[in-house]
Length: 277
Image (cartoon, rainbow, N blue to C red; front, side, top):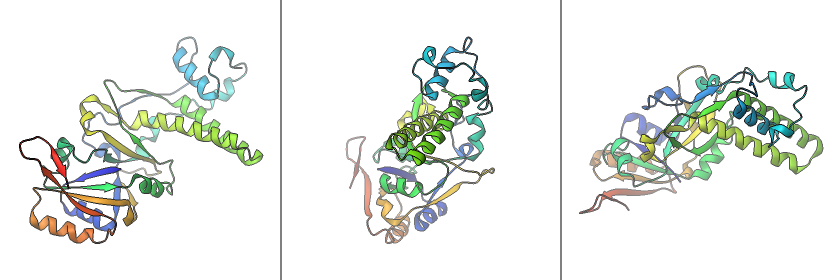
């Protein structure tokens, strides 16, 4: 399941009533290190940068750089010198979720100190919904690290080319091997996007965040609006400090989600725990 914490506001209530999620430009988030990976680009010198070269050769399909037929391949690799995942940043849109419904800090920081609410989404339905979008959308866990990762544009370029080649072979030969190969390579591209757009400092690890990441052709700062079906909402959890007026408004909106339960996040007496019931 995916969990989305909200404070009560006109924006959050409109999103709930209109069945909308907003995938934001990374600069809209509160982490100043957001998407701060070390983005590498340009040709690789195998003598000076052996690790980059080995990663490039693995993306090309060879585990051992020494066994790869690299003679007369300079022209092939040169076409990827301009690849740089950093240039994708303006078009990337991110929608943040949590993986825990009873996280005290999430309720405090994003659920307005139990005055807000949390929506439980069915991940399978959300995945099916975003599968209709262009831009290679996917949902992933956030990685927490003590230093930014390095993300190599040359490796991305080779993988991208190899995916196109695998799909071409599949359409020509109708051999499932090539379809499986294309999916395997796509998962490696997702890993690069994950490193670039879903890695955060260790200090944020309490969030146990999950992210929906999608590449768009937008060149502005506006969010991408994602419409989801009513069956995507499994429950709406209300903080037990929510005002009666806000509770009534959300309960009225919840009527448009026939499969969703209304639950309450309650403080357990004599503990620092929440009971969801």
